[in-house]
Length: 568
Image (tube, rainbow, N blue to C red; front, top):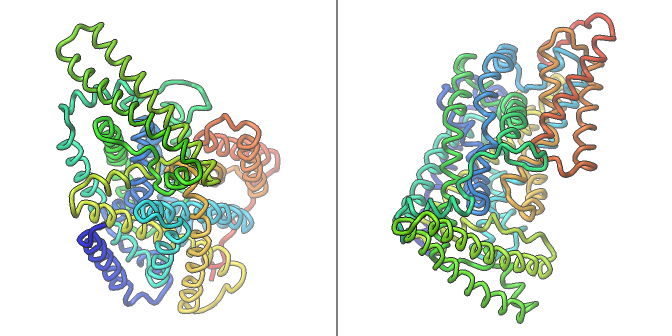
């Protein structure tokens, strides 16, 4: 990569780190470290919430998803506006008004200590693994650029980020997120502009071809539970996932707990309700445009250069044959695409249909050869070979003008650092407040808890780096992070729903939560064809059903328990 690109990366990271460290000065108590003394304006909280999701995973995994699968993934977010409205009138006023540090403190006040601790433990497990996936995203970029082993790239990203997070607080994280949001949006608009400029045919003709390839299909009204992205999985499963993520996940709850008031906390969530789906569609469209770009330009047989080198070394004859067949198939697809664009304006309806059928057939030929190459890469590397995460990095580095690669890489690294910092800060909050302070050292100075928080952050950082080396090989990173979360989120949401039902009791709710986790595990193991998005709905329904059944049969409601920290 040209040295000018490295200068852009270095300057931007220096600005982000310097500003983050500057904002940590004067933070001497845990409320300032974890909640910014509850002083953040609604728009900063809203941008921080959105920026945490618009992370390096979004730039890499979602664009790759758009290139290979089109716009269908946007259905995943159809439940988001519904969830935000529900949260605004339910959980947000409950938690913000309770003046808690973590969402799980509220559960002890409502039920008991074991319910609080077990729910917090589920959060720590799910968010710790998801944080590893966030580290994996920029590591994929570096691996693609330099051909380095993914473990070294994880260390290069993870180590400085953990150090930065150890000295930072939620205020530094939130304001870094605000800057990150604008950098990511600017980088995506720059890439889209370059893609449109370099498109050899009119944009409407190109999108017509993308539609023929199935890349512009947004809605799928199928009731097939094995399909991950359908209208119904987005509206039902997606709503439950978003309710749990934004309403009970400490990494998000901690944001609106830092807002000045309940109204400002609600406003911050509504910002995501209005803007998340359009932004996600724009990012997916970037991937679709990359697919169209490679219809008219030579496309890599394997987007992961390391896998390509391994296949060439271990099976040279097969690799040469695949390359030759691929070049022929690519040329045939390009010709079919150009013919389809031309006939669209000059031919009859029948001729247009025939030209599109021909293009689809040539595109299928390319896909068949790619599938064979990916299988060869899997044999050669001994690891899963799906290379969706390498599509956008290869495009940026191979095709964008000088400086654009630096802007994109800066956006990826800055997004990763900010998101990782946010995740690690929330993991540390739950660890210290829900376990260390609650069970081990209930009475100590703020300085003591600050020091423990920094040690906890470092430990979680190491754990996330270990997860990252595995997550980078699992396929689309945007799917991986949501698969991790969906295993836990439904059951966590279920216990919070029970907390708002007056007749729910502690014993029944705890058993209900165990039942929900067991039901999700059973479905994941024995009914794998059921898509992970439905796990959220299954977990929440089982928790509420079992919890209420046992509570209604157990007599009068027990008195709420006050947490030790609040009582102190």
